[in-house]
View 1 (cartoon, rainbow, N blue to C red):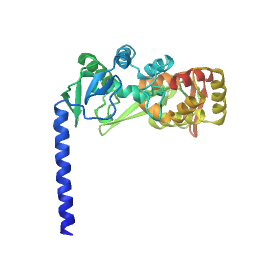
View 2: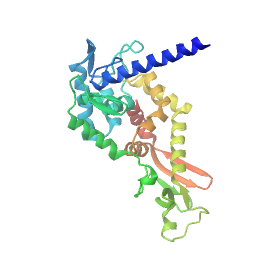
View 3: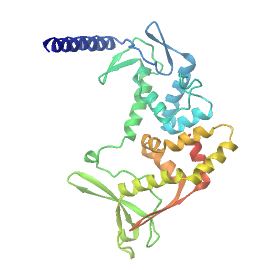
View 4: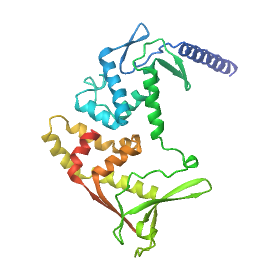
Length: 301
């Protein structure tokens, strides 16, 4: 038993020495292996710029400064026929997903740095993106962050703005809020009720987060329905630029895609897909705009 314990202790010390050596190498700006980021290849344990891929990286950064939308950038790249780097499991590469574009926009390697435990160190590789450009992109992300409610002093605009109606009087419901013990709570409230006008509904105010969650769940449910899947099959037969597998993947990953979007892009999608949302005491009713359905799916793909 003593020998076993001594062996474990020696193994632990060896592991600590390896971690220390790894950290020291990173602090020197060395590349420590793995798959190089898009835009780089690895030669003699150093990152070397791949000019062809670097053009894509530069395009992503410059376009993001113009549009502030990685959702739109992914669509542009895919429509232009660009694909990610080929792998063993995907020899032709695959379409740019939102998270792939997001990783590129947040990767400090592109400004010539390496990271270790949240700290940046000057890398031994050449930068593809100027540091000032990289910093501008990070400031855009900060601008679109969803702050914690405790630090929030102003109300977060709803991505359902202009779509939510009261069932009883068929007027728009406006977003209101209340603050309790430093926390902010958002609601949808009948505008007639806010103006002290008559409203026959027994409930005039509904929690915004619950309504928004149900709307997203209902959208996902509808888009995954057999009727929509059949429409997608017909779409794949008509379109030469997208496969049935890509369409099915887009639908399958709807939840993940939604979580990667910031609110301005969520609002854009919702307004493309929904004409009207009616709130009542026993649930919600969604009037879909299926005319833009094909356009929306192609963007998601």
